[in-house]
Length: 328
Ligand SMILES: Nc1nc2c(ncn2[C@@H]2O[C@H](COP(=O)(O)OP(=O)(O)O)[C@@H](O)[C@H]2O)c(=O)[nH]1
Ligand SMILES: [Mg+2]
Image (tube, rainbow, N blue to C red; front, side):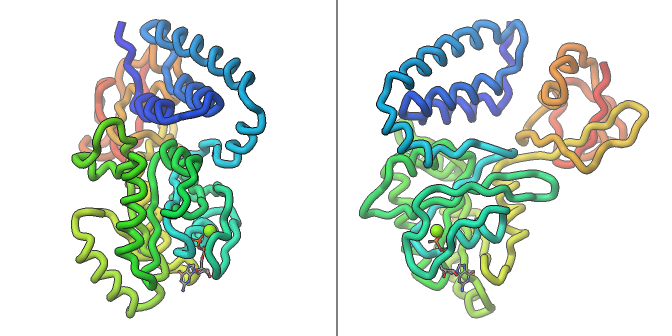
């Protein structure tokens, strides 16, 4: 029987692989289990993983308590449709960005190394919640392993540089440090060696306060070329271009919003289901209710690539903004 695993599974699996401590492994494994649809085809897999989980849990309890408490600050529970971790040198405005974009209030200060532990906050893009995680700076003098693990577990990294302070050097240095620890932006996949963690990455050039800095940004874009295809000029404290950054993050996470339409009723356009790009009617059905998945015969779709209300099969690939009526 086919297992039909959703794309979320493979992401979660990658994060599980990247986990180091038994505590972290157990948490990632629980997350992995939650992505597996419950049907006959996945019985074996689920049983197998549950056995592994109970072994890891007892291992974690036997381990040193002090160590796990130390790690827990760097263990940010994933919430919302995706987790974005901000990465960069000190003083570029990572905390200011998280403050401007989310409900969180990490400390922002004119001197480096104000942020010691990761601080998560929720950002809204349309009605989709995306988690941003502010982090201590990534610094060549001392690379904290827990910070690297935090980055490995994320869905996307937002590299932040300061347009007013040698942004190209900052970007190159950050990328080099990450690469050294086998964390590679997905768009540079070709350069990944061995078992690197590949994740989507975009760049925010912060402190682009005025047209003078717009010009600097244009120069930076020119220099960077195709190395960093998605780079957004922003100013956290003005604020400037924050909506553009929000949507760049939404796109970078490869998310789509799908609206459920009950038969003979209007769709609820306020609360989208958030799926990964490439998801099918079948994935959507499994998200709405597992009962739907079993009974699903076809669906009607309003949106991209279909005529209004077109009847489609289970394998039909959905697009951002589609309205779907499931038929059982
Ligand atoms: N001019 C300007 N200053 C900013 C901007 N964003 C942040 N800053 C300032 O840069 C300094 C460092 O910011 P912070 O968020 O603490 O940097 P972090 O170390 O990367 O978290 C603070 O003095 C902020 O007020 C911006 O868009 N423009
Ligand atoms: Mg900070």
